[in-house]
Length: 110
Length: 115
Image 1 (cartoon, each protein chain N blue to C red):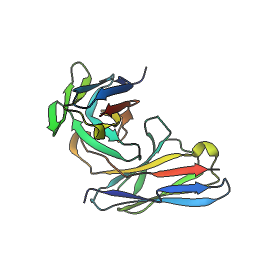
Image 2: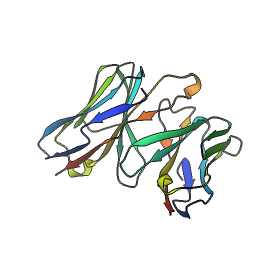
Image 3: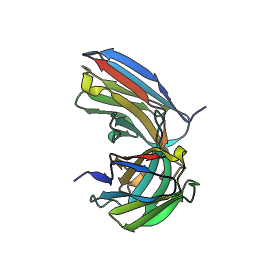
């Protein structure tokens, strides 16, 4: 079992739909990151969370430390949101290492 | 300036060639990283430099040789690569932060093809 599990692996939505991507992890963490990777390759850091909830534009990220679970929500989805979304954690014992989930491929159709 | 730049964007090389990948950041970050990413897989950490010293080498084969000439630059020297080394090579940087709560900033990557 991977230390970081994401679901779903693939997600197709219609423009305007509310989207949720889930991430579960099995280790004690100092921080959890949500990353976005477009087909061109570059990775953008969306959020870093250690507790609670963060919002940026149409994106909301939440984390429940007790349940070792985080969610990324996209409201009013748009085709430009199509990308791979990756959950990554920094465990308390891993030094500088991030442990990555396998990613969720999101496709938003117009 | 929150940008990490990488050159070249694309690289094709033969198995006997020597080439270098370059990464640069001007955010004053003291940690820099090399990752390798195969298609449809998450990035895999290769090396970490902290304050210009190699702090993590994830058992990477010696045909990959990292170098950190100064706090803004990170190189990855390639020699005698194999076709299975073809991948996207990503550079990242971060500032030290208490409790490990730093954000890593990623470059656009170099897409490498080894023939």
